[in-house]
Amino acid sequence: MEVTLLGTGDTTGTPTVGCDCETCTAARDQGVERSRFSVHVRNERTDESLLIDASPDFRAQFLDRDVSLPDAAMVTHIHFDHLDGLGNAFRLFRELPVAAANQTDPETDESVADTIERKYDYLDALSVAGKEPIEPFELCGFDVTLVPVRHPPLVCYGVVVKDPETDAKLSITGDTNYAIPEASRERLADPDLLVADAIAPAAFCEHHPAGGDHHDSEGVPRTFGTKHMTREGALALADELGAAETRLVHVSHFFPAEEAFAEPLAVDGERYRL
Ligand SMILES: [Zn+2]
Ligand SMILES: [Zn+2]
Ligand SMILES: [Zn+2]
Image 1 (cartoon, rainbow, N blue to C red):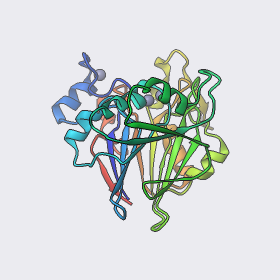
Image 2 (cartoon, protein in one colour):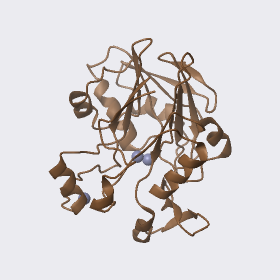
Image 3 (cartoon, rainbow, N blue to C red):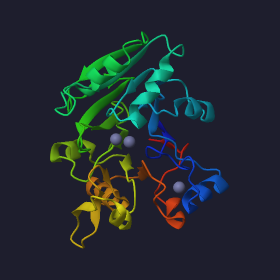
Image 4 (cartoon, rainbow, N blue to C red):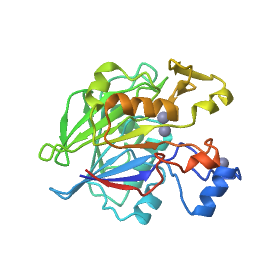
């Protein structure tokens, strides 16, 4: 299994358009980028590729990185930065199957699969398959599972990708706060690589109108606002899950410049072989 982190940023990305903060300036100086979230997973046995989340930066990501166009895609939730790249399928794909959860979201009265179907009704290349969370299914020769996470007010899902032949395991938290349900934690546990949402450092919670949540025994918030994990929360989760390797993603420009490019915060283009 070859994993390429195509997009490691939050919804504005780094550098953020029009921003001259020290972190965005440092990113420009160092020539590194955190575009909107997407992960490319290649099955080296079957030579198939799976795209997890469709970034609005799809075009630049596929031009910049040595990756093949996907044979299938999955979408974790309906926020712009994970979904709107699907429009790129127009005239690029004859056929692109898209898998997403089939559970109705009380907030939208639709499942993620329903929303994709409705929004991309005009794209004949897309075929959407609604999948039951927690139930593994086969995609690109992998065993894949969508696991419910917590990203209020919308439903959102983490993704577990396992190679049934080699037992290689990739766990992606999706956009989530620290309160991931126990059944999902069990599915995410013991990955060779954990890709975890860590939008900001815990210290930055004081700048969020909702502050922080899910504090640890030392009072450190593991959730930033209500929707995402802090760096500290993501690292605590990695520890709890027993991840062999961890990369922090969905990273914002709110990390101070001296921390923003330190380990284990990911930047675009990183590649792992599991
Ligand atoms: Zn900035
Ligand atoms: Zn989101
Ligand atoms: Zn997001």
